[in-house]
Image (tube, rainbow over all chains, first blue to last red; front, side, top):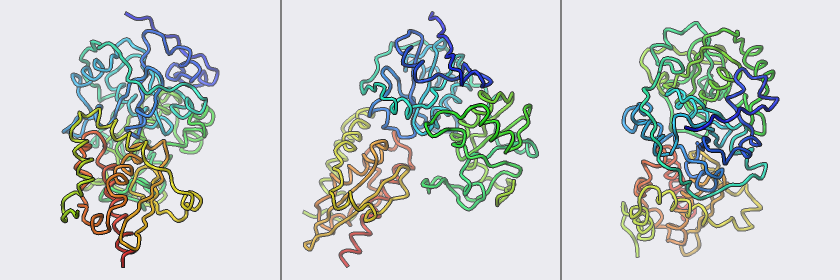
Length: 295
Length: 147
């Protein structure tokens, strides 16, 4: 049994709805040796971890580890328990996730872990970029963590996840499309620079507001302050504090980042990530689509 | 020695066999070695980035240039950031496998060669298509310069 780690009391975090969901690089450097802490890196580039990672950090790969290898779905309870056990992560561990590109994939990994209700999940504010920019140590060795005995917990898809049928029923209520402007209008059938992961039809789900996910990140890859986020999602996109929100992108990774911002930082009680996203909706027969700049 | 159309040139074949001979984890390590061994651009390109062509199919920035000598020898030049080791690794495989070969030998490399390294389950298919796109562009340059 390990003792829970203290929360990071950084002043910036105290304005967020759930300050305990973030840690600063200073906090992590100070607690790196604490028992009960596991750091996991999740990147867009599958080799980046091998070039150097935060000392002791394990690698969590979205493509090969968090997805079911056959069905388009995440691993099930048994698969997740096996994965966490192999990585040496216990159910009572404080799991701090970080990664490249503004924590894009780290937020995705965190969202998947949240589907299994891992109790203590945190994100490193600024991720890999900030850790390296500050000249903090990196290590290329494989961490030696003893195998853990993670219990089989079934995935809860009701709280944070939305499926196509639920999105159809949600039409008319708040939706945030976090893709690039060109994908939103329907001009592009794919993410800029990612040509083949496309859909047959372009555009957005009717009623969805466009807020590209990376607007929530500052230049140093940290999250924008609560006031700045409120200006974007409330003043600009018009979300009201008690809204039930569905977010989506192309496969649900970029929208995990926005899910984190809306639920944990701005405190929206009900935010679901539609991971089928545009690669399902834009290929789906008779799914309603709107093109152009208007929701 | 010229490989026939549809088969890998022995140099590329040898690299594919090296990848095939090791377990998954070490395969990524091997890809990282190719990333590390990719030579830097010579000054004539480093100072004139505009002479390089971007390969937009790659998820991370990748630029390349191709030169074909009077005797048909192909020279390859790649530029990719250190923060994109997977893309660099693919460029490294192409460099190690094709640089210095004859134009015909490069053109005979099968378009689906990227499936020969056992990386399908380790790297997303999207990225592997990036490697195929690099080869397609290299071949196009070789054809244009030979014409």
